[in-house]
Image (tube, rainbow, N blue to C red; front, side, top):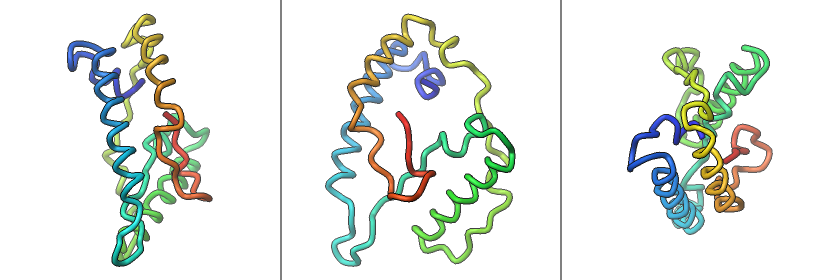
Length: 139
């Protein structure tokens, strides 16, 4: 809901914008499913970062937020082959929305987007790697 609420006026309104985003999610999932590994090196070609796993509103303490963000950075560092994953300032400029998506969109649109979400069950998000909590995303 947050993504659609942040662009509620795009594409003629929330319901149409949601349909377009859903179409892109379907195409992206088909692409990702057919491009898992590099044919030469055998390494994974893509990784998953769940935005909700770095948002403070999804954690009880600031410590839990820092730990989750550090895990995301550690995994990305390893995946990308970067020499150092220590980045204490990486999220200094991160700003989370303070808007209530249901309030922004209105009851009627929230119901329609709930129906759209049902069409994505089992399709989006793609499965993350087992054992990495920060890659277990919701819709």
